[in-house]
Image 1 (cartoon, rainbow, N blue to C red):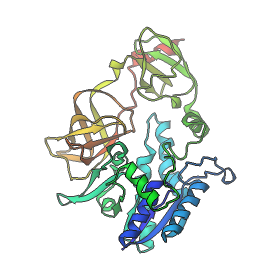
Image 2: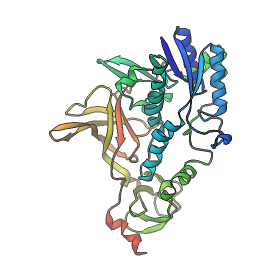
Image 3: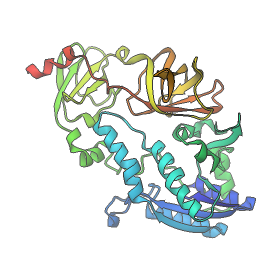
Image 4: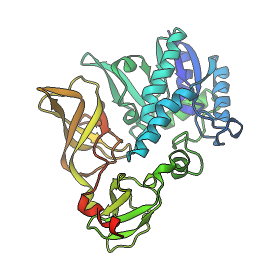
Length: 380
């Protein structure tokens, strides 16, 4: 079977290619150029970025050593349009998007899959820590053996067609096992450190990237307490997210958090942690791997952030004109939870956290404060 492996130049994708080659598949390694990651290319130098020159060299080195064909394809335009533009557009509207989910959905199992089919490949493999298998007459995502590395959160939006063509060779291994197996095979990437940051964010960080690309999100404005007191001035809503505590630059008798961002009035609203607690969250653009949600709701555990411990909830379909809108849902928590920002992913798991059941994007109004709170700064 011919299979395309997305080779980023890291240890996980390198071993994935080697394992599939040993299995007897005809492996074609593809490194995707997604961003101008070298200064001479109009970008920045960051060796751990997945499409940097050093990563591409490492991917080719592994391909040569394992007897795998290797190509570099330019997907920068698609990446800008499908991932970066979505990311910037979300921030401009007061949301906090997750570009890694979008990249998996539109690039790695979108554009790369289209390229793979043009090469006559039947499947696409990556180095993600996840598993995909057939169950209940559907393709389902199963969490990785190494729960500390599990990446199903970032893969929740893959469709049935995408899951049917996906393969994750290291999903049944721990990270230590991956490194040991890579060393035994003499792979040049065996001991490379991991890249944990968003690949298109430079060394100066998120705020600098946002200032350069959406300066309209960095207009100074008031910081107010939810009781109406003016506490200070912010330098742009783009530098704040719901739930943020550090870097607020205000003094108060108790810890304060960002509880609302009002883009119409350019106001940051602060309040105590209790003001962040919610009992339910609306979701949009949902994907459910086991089919439509039950009419009486889906009992599950949900993550609103990648690293959080899943919490007990029931997800209900949203009725519309006598039927259920499959793209929308309401998450109702067993216990109040600190809400995540609009635009972040909310991903559901079974009780054992063994199956990823799907999920959606947190919807809402951006957390606008009551007009009585927000009217105070306009008088100053």
